[in-house]
Amino acid sequence: MRTSGTPEPATVSAYFAWISVCLIWGTTYLGIKIALETIPPFLMGGIRYTISGAVLAAWLLARGRRLPAREDWGRLVILGFFMLMLGNGGVVWGEQFVPSGLTAVLIGTSPFWMVTVDAIVSGGRQLGVWQILGLAIGFAGIVVLVWPDITAGGAGGRNFALGVLSLQIACAGWAIGSAYTRRHVMPRDVFGSAALQMFFGGVFLMLAGTLAGEWPRLAFNMRTTIALVYLTLVGAVIAFAAYSYALRHLEMAFVSLYSYVNPVIAVVLGTLILNEPFHARTAIAIAIIAAGVVVVRRALVIDNG
Image (tube, rainbow, N blue to C red; front, side, top):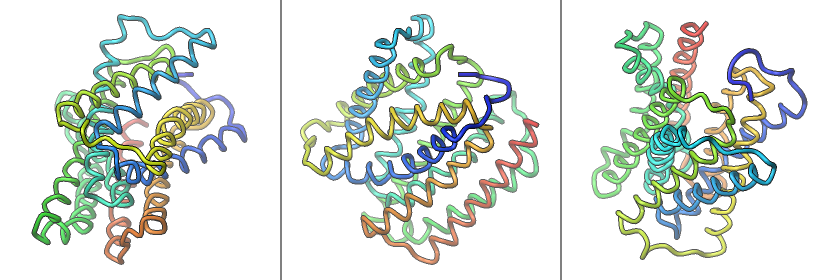
């Protein structure tokens, strides 16, 4: 895969791959919610990513491809911690208390964390006016979305607040990992790097599940097993391959539009299949957050252009 320069010519297959990413990653929030019915959060993420990493590595080796050299493993361990241990771990833990659709919406605020982390790690570069405006709009949308539930009181309100906090930790972990990737990781083989990153991240999640005492609560039924298999093979291995293929043939600005589609799919599925509530306030909050993301992304394009 190319790491710089212009993408290869767009093809019908590339657009199909992008559509696949939109659909698959939009459904993973539903899959996580179902899997959580019997599988504790950290062990669920750990099982998912250790298996998906091993499957992808085995596939690469079977095709005669080499995995990253040992000297690159340390960087991939760091990425596995931030992007999967914190990133995915924060999502699965938070989704215990937050509806799947709202989870996708809150994870869609990752660009807010991207610009903040980028400002911190780039020598204290000041945020621009557009970035500050986008952050303010996005924060207002988050407040509209979660404030009534957080202030409701009782265990439900406290758990919801902890879930929202966990989702923001997930966004921060993903942003830190992304910033680290841009500055320190230039993978020779993006698939091999992804395989080890998923495997190392899965090991971290398994360790977290062990320390949290999740093993006695681990159980499977047909419904949760199917969800876990889907998350592992389709949501991780196949979706990543489709994402990488789309990046190879389409402009990054276009590919990144999947982040606008995923929350819509997740909200619709959560409402239709899990009967998650959807109110006018939710729609207004989603629109406000989306506006903030658009403004922040505009700032990113200007800064990189």
